[in-house]
Image 1 (cartoon, rainbow, N blue to C red):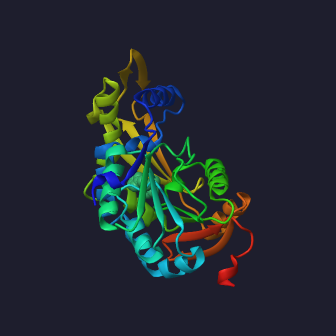
Image 2: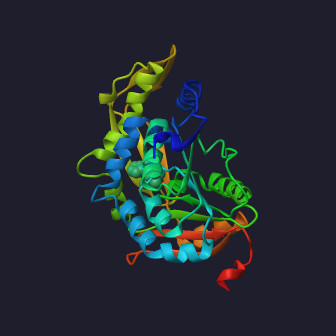
Length: 327
Ligand code: AVJ
């Protein structure tokens, strides 16, 4: 099969979006830039490298959970569904589901255009029986589906604890929105990182090889190459720590000394030690996430954990009652 088999919908945010959001974020107190901007092509590759790190447990743990629960998911979702993947990235996890679920249609949505295209083309080649669609979009802003669905049951897959990037109130709004898309009989399969010993969290975001640091610092390279920002990335350091009160990992780019950076003729002053807050990664207990899901009128049907209780995969359904074929 050729690459033409993929139906592609391009809603990639414009460079103006990046500029507007960055200028706004750097003008705020404290300074911040949203983590979705990590994922240019190099950032997506660095994130892939993070997923292979010994310290970064979420990816392999979620994969192991999915391998175990895929048959049950098939029972819950039934055959011939439409599988929608949010933040599909390298699309490795989805393969576990595709093989067991045998959906009719697949739609991958991601903000990283080249990366998305490459991976969905590989999917189309490897699964010739699958109708493959891809949409390049910022799903944190615009989650309207392209017009590529029929009446089949929709199963959305939101892996990797990307939901942890949202503030809890944003996560709630996001779940409410997904729920509308999945009506009337769809379900959401979502990977959520669990609260745990902060030491384990700390190691996962401060790896020995410095890949996470490179991933964080790549944001500054992006500001230079895409926005023509005048700044010296070497003046910034990666910092990640667990904020126990908020229940989240925070990543920052810390300015080592007082400086000014310049974008589009606008100057942003940094004090020594001042940072750009580049990511939050919220961690949820199972009970906390269930409460959030219920507030979005999503019904927790099943949750799977690994034996060490590092990570969780939730199956949440739109319909309040269990679908008849699993009774
Ligand atoms: C893609 C948001 C799930 O929070 O663990 C990995 C991103 N940042 N290392 C996470 C990330 C630093 C990741 N998510």
